[in-house]
Structures are given as C-alpha cells and as structure tokens.
Image (cartoon, rainbow, N blue to C red):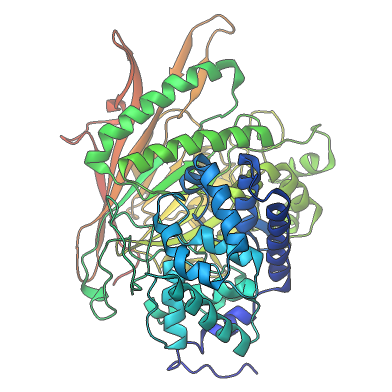
Length: 625
C-alpha cells in the first residue's frame, strides 16, 4: 500500500512522482551528461558550431514513453536561443573555459556578470549552470528562475536572490539537501523543482503524470517565468499575453493569485492552420523561396488583426517522400518561420499529424503487411488484431514506415511538449493546453496508416474509434476537461470507406464534440458547417496547400499553383464567470497572380467575408467553469 500523502506539506505529493521515474530515464540523462563532459574536455576552448549544437542536444536529451527525446528543457537551448549562442561562438568558448575552472570565489564574483553581460545571448541562467552541472553533477545544479521558485516552495526557505553568485551557491546547497534527504539523483533535480513549481502554482497537479512518464519539462527563460518571482531583475517582452502552452504567465505578466484566478478575465487564443507543405518537392523547390517570402509578408499584415498566435496546427504532408533528409530540410524551413513569428511577437507551439507523403512506404505492394492491410475493411478480426497491442508485426511495420516522422516530432523544438499523450498508431497525439484562461484540447489522428502503396485510396481509408484512446480509456472525460476541443487529420472524412465514415461520424466526431475539424490533403481551402437530423453542427476547416503544385494535361501542359493557409482566434464570449460559448474566427488566405506579381490575399472563394476579411461561427463550451 502506498504511503499516505500529506497534502498540507508541499513536498509530500511531489516526492513519490520523482521517485517513480523509470530507471531508463535516469540512465539516459547520466549518459548524455557524461558524453557532454567528454566533448567539453576534448574541445575546451575550441568548440565548433557543430560541437556546440551537439552539446545542446545532449543537454536536452531525455527518455520518455520508451524512446529518447529532445525535450529535457523544452524551448531552452534550442531554436532561437541556440542560434544566438552559436553566433557568439568565441564568447561561448571563453565562458565555458572559465566555468570549467571556476571555484566558489570566482562564481561569487563573476557568475551574475557573465549572465547579464550580453556575451551569452539566449543562454539565460540555464547555459552557464548546465555547464557547471556537466562538470560536477553532484555539486552544481542547472538553474532557471522557475526552478528557484520550485525550491522555495518545497523547502520553505527564504527567497533566493540572484543578484550575486552567493545566490546560486545557496540554491545548489539547498537543492542538494532535498535530493540527499529523499534519495533522489542530482540528474532528476530539475524534475523535482519543476514539480515543486507546479505544486506552488496549482495544488491539483495530477499524480498520474509520473506514471505516464510525462514529466513537466522546463520552458525557456526567454518564454516564461514562475508566478512567484525570485529577487531578480527581468524585463517584459512584447505581447506578453501570448503565453506558452501549459506554461506559467509570460515574463512581465502579473501572475494571478489562487484566489483571484477564478475571476481573472479570459483571453482569446490565436492559431494558424498550415497543411501540405511537401518539403523536398524537387521539381518545384526553386519556387518555394518566393512563396515563403509572400507568406512572411502576409503574416506581418495579419498579425495586427488576429495575432499573436499561440498554436500552429499542421495537418500533414509536411514532406514529399517522408525521408530523414526531407525532415532535416523541414527543420530549416520551420526555423525561418519561427524566427518570423518571434519578430512579430508570437511564440506559438506546433501540433501536427502525418499525411500520406510523410511515410516511407514498403518496397512492394505484396510485402506481408501492406498486403494484409489491404483486407482491413473486410475482416473485423484483422482490425482488432492490429489495434489490440503495441508489439504485433503490423504496428511494428507501421512504426518503421513513420519512423522519420516520429523522430522529427521527438526532436522538433517547436512541437508541444507538455501534457502530451501519444497513441498506439504513430502520429496519434492528444495535447491539453491552457492559454489565457481558455482550456484547449487538441486530438490529432493518423488517417493515412492504410495508405502504404501508391494506389488511389479515395473511400478506402479509416480513422478507427480505437484511435481516440490516445486521450485515455474514457475519451469523453478528457474532452470535458477543456472549454473547446479540436480534431486534426490529414484526410477529409470523404476519403474514408463507407463503414469507417459512419463509425467516424458516430464514435469520433459526433456533432458538437469538436469546435472544428481541421484537415488538408485536397490542396483547396474550404469550410463547412453541417447538421444531420437536427443534431449539433459539425464544423470543418479544410486548408489550402501551403506549397502545392498541380499539373493538368501532362508535362508542358497547364500548371495551376495553389498556395494558402488560414489564421484565426478562439474568442470566449464570456470573459469572466461560467463560459457558455466560444466564437471561432477564421481568416482564410490564398495566393493570387496579378499584374504586380503573386501575393496572398483574403480567400473570398470560401464565401462572403466580413469587414475584417474573416468569417466566424459559435460553438458551445464543452467544459462549464
């Protein structure tokens, strides 16, 4: 029998969660830090850009849900933060050399100056302290402002001032005391302190988090700060209301107290829907820079009217052939896109599903798995067999086909990392996020797992009800935890086989369950609202291809280029008190060709737009506050 948890003691609910972390997770973290130590000792003072990026990957290396992931510190030391440090490679080498030889007296005199001096942009407190931790894991601890707050919440000691290096040494001493008392490895110090920080902000942190291995990961200092700030000077960034998913308030924002949170005004949630990028389409890749430039210009125009954006919903066909090389190329494209978001004042999180171009298909149609799955709709026993367990040969082969996609999801610095569940089928994902007081659930389901050959699969696909188990055995309970829920697939329902389409309507997408169903595949923007027999409306948002090229009449014939996307907001109609309805506002965009060249404009082909070049519809809130 598990020991009783003393809820009056802040540390009592936290310790069992940390102690329940799997041994494989501890071993992975140890190996990564040991490898980082070896790299630094080998190249001390001579780190190249490649070496530095390898160190960032090792610092962020973790082990969750049975696989190695890049997410230990979430947005810390990745993306823009990593690039800023790489640009100051000389200063980084000097700092690492000094930290590698530093004694306590040097830390007291110089650590804060190093942190604030501007020579380590993007590093925050995390970079210099992770270097010290790598040097001596048992003595020095990685530090972020929120982790300092977690320590204060757990040990009940005084606030720690980070105005001098004494504060950091005090932080390490107090953290080591907690770890020693409860027999926790120093490699789990960040987990302990992040749980402590969440316990301080929310007394109802779910105990089951540890059982699923979905430990809270530390957001970047550049994005968030804890609700109870240590004594440290900070500046507010622009658009502080656009908070990271599942994160405490943005830096500079006033943190609501527990008593006032229930009446705090709700904010709206901004989103972008992208689909069908087809990264790596070599026959037309020379066109992409001009398209991307047009998208960047249009994002600038849109940001003032419907930004900042909190979510990017990407509904498949991110690549053309699903190869590892194309996903690396995709990283470079998304790096440019997220730099543009930062310029505009947005820091969105990405949630995606795979499309039929995001997998490596078996070599032959007559290979055992594709041949067997061609009988999917004829044999219920086959469907039961495939979806019953994670170790059957069908699931193993599907994981191999989608391996490049799932590896990209695991390493992507933009992908949502907190409150994320993964399903049996590769690419199935469920994400819970709270943004500006609005709780949003996003379910992404793999609609292309049967499309393992190059044939036409119209009315031959399936999205099986069992895929909803991605959000737990009782999907309806998970859905009711959110004010609104969204469904992402690559294919529209019309591509499902007749039985599968009926099951999808009845078991997955009954009217009123989702605020909207986002999908792509058709390369044309379209939106529908339908009701059957007086039931609640179903709303669908079909995205235009971000970069598609359609050819007619064969080579040399007419070519129609279709590029577009949509942006919008979820706008609560009651800003305080019980939430009854949410307005979904959509700004459809499409590229047109004119005498002045190609440009992206409002897409009037989807119907009449209002004065804001948008259309909107209202949905009932699934969760009543």
